Amino acid sequence: MFDNLSTALQKTFKNLRGYGKLTEKNVKDALREVRLALLEADVNFKVARDFINQVQDKCLGDEVLLSVTPGQQVVKVVNDELVALFGGAHEEFKLVGNPASVMLMGLHGSGKTTSAGKLAYRWKKSGRRVLLVACDIRRPAAVEQLSILAEQVGCDIVRPEPGESVPQLGRRAAQLSKAVRYDVVIYDTGGRFQIDDELVQELKEFEAETQPNNKVLVLDAAIGQESVNVAETFRDAVGLTGMILTKLDGDARGGAALSVHAVTGCPILMTGVGEKMEDLQPFYPDRMASRILGMGDVVSLVEKAQEVVDEKDALKMQEKLAKNQLDLEDFLSQIQMMKKMGPISNMLDSLPGNTMKMDDKQKEAIAKASEVEMKKFESIIQSMTVWERKHPKSIDRPRRLRIAQGCGRKLADVNQLLKRFDQMGKMGKQFKKMEKRLRHLQKFTTK
Image: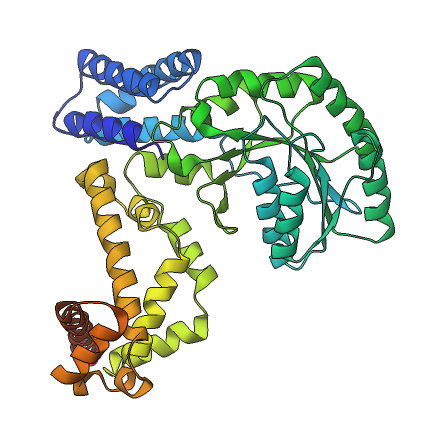
């Protein structure tokens, strides 16, 4: 996401850092490039104009122009303004009440039903009792789609009865959710290909019956500036407490995310970055600004790792690495853990300075090659016997040939895996030597 904007901004700031002293002309020339980058990213032109004016006013102040590191100060100003543009502080759903209620709205194809399932998965995982309500009675198979998601998540669902209107369904579901004492109820309302009077009236009546404390608009980030018009219409019709931006993983521009909060004043609560249940992530303005400016998002990367890695297993793996006792079972576990963390391209974007060194094609090529290699290594290890996995150094040529034939790979692929595993073992030895040197140094300095 934001790949084009990120590349353009980093190029501009790299040029600014080359100046020992900034002038008004330097700043205005640089911000002209930033403005073009924002417009090319499909940011609303009024939002882009106001953003540039605010950045320019601050950059032309004495604090920046007379700074020892003026280029870096400009980056800080832009970073601060980006955070403000995204909404400032991170905001959560208001999960209060008995039960807490969430009304999802949006156009057809924006990802409402999928987002409903992902939210249910997230909150059920945290120990809450969740009820899904299928309120989209017009779209073919919408109720069935939500039913499948409810089964996958393991939560209950309320389906429409024959002849029941959407407001009547909402009233029945609200009464049921209170009687059975659910923690959260999620209403998946119907959408249209465009906003019309019938849709608005239906949403108003539904909102009056259910009185949700979260009225959330689900927006497809790929529709660009049209998202601003959609968000304004829904806000004016029924009021909004927040937004979810979907399909950010497939939109290189990302202008919607930079525009909707500034225009509507509604916070972006979460973003959809993939098709899996766990690919709905909380939105942090400061972290997103850091990623756009090439400073990475290590905090989110660590949080993701903590979600998929058991702490005890991690410590055990660390001890085995230090003692050079890792086997191919451990190597397989590491591969599977990496796969759980999501696409490699997302992890590359989270590494500081990474996007500054690589263009989009390079990142895509590295991510694709890494994913292909992980899949290949996984199939090779799974073709081995338990004894072979535990004793990788004893895998001779006949065994390698049998393993390659068993998984449909080449002998060279098996050799490559074993070589990579051997390199990992050497790294463990190096860490152990470094640890010994540090201990020796500590003893020497304490004396």
